[in-house]
Amino acid sequence: MQQSLRLANVIRGWSAAGTAAAVGSAAVLHDPIIMPAQAVLFFFTYIFATQWQERLLQDS
Image 1 (spheres, rainbow, N blue to C red):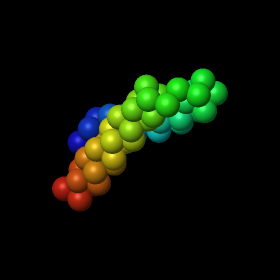
Image 2 (cartoon, rainbow, N blue to C red; image 1 turned 90 degrees about the horizontal axis):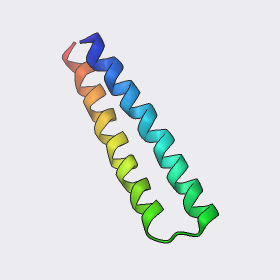
Image 3 (tube, one colour; image 1 turned 45 degrees about the vertical axis):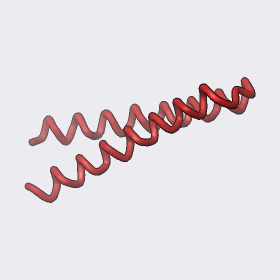
C-alpha cells in the first residue's frame, strides 16, 4: 500500500514537471504542435496518477 502511494506521488511529480517543461519549451521554441502534445500527455498522466492515489487512499 505505501509503495503504491509513493509510486503515485512520484508519477504525479514527474507529470507536473513534464507538463511545465513542455509548456515552457513550447513558449520559448514557438512549437505549435509537438510541445503542446507532450504537455497534454503529461497532464493526462498526472490526472491518472491523482485518481489512482485517491482510490488507494479510499481503500485504506
